[in-house]
Image (cartoon, rainbow, N blue to C red; front, side, top):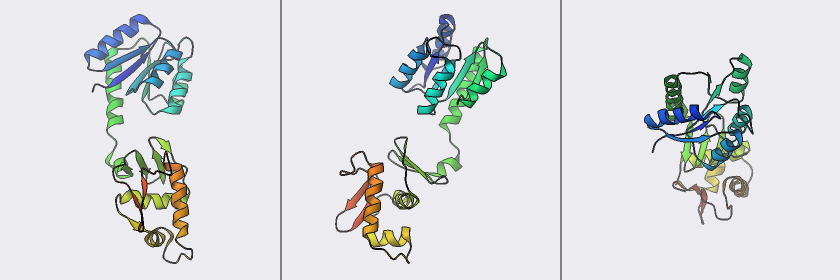
Length: 230
């Protein structure tokens, strides 16, 4: 599948030229002529990168950048007819990945697009090693953070510890006592109902339908496990 780029600019000639050049380079291109249309198309589609003009009718480019960045980490290259540093700083602070001032060389823009896409597609080995993924569930180990389908999970420290153990060993069934020993510690004075309470709370945060869990499953009469292929 070709990588999909959204080009947002109100200059028809520039947009036509960019579309032609990008398509010749093998990209799929969608265009928008104002900020409102850009947000509508962003929400309706899936894009690998956005080329976004700063000065747009309806909704300005900085506002578009802010709203996109609030919902997605899709790379953004901002374009502007202004050379003022303040515009560049504002764009970058709002989450733009790069910046070009008009008039620009199309070959330079394409080179920057390719460079950003390479960085986005090739996370470092260290980054990969710091993540554990099962289906749409991802744990970011150094940050002790979890998300499912891109949605962050608000877990307590103990809930995270329990989920991390299960995610690191998908398909392995743990008894309640094993979970108490491994997560709470051998000297924990509580009973195995503690495990049940934490499992229920994790399911409420993780599962779309907690009563019919897709990820955190029960092996009746034995204990709990994480489904390896949810």
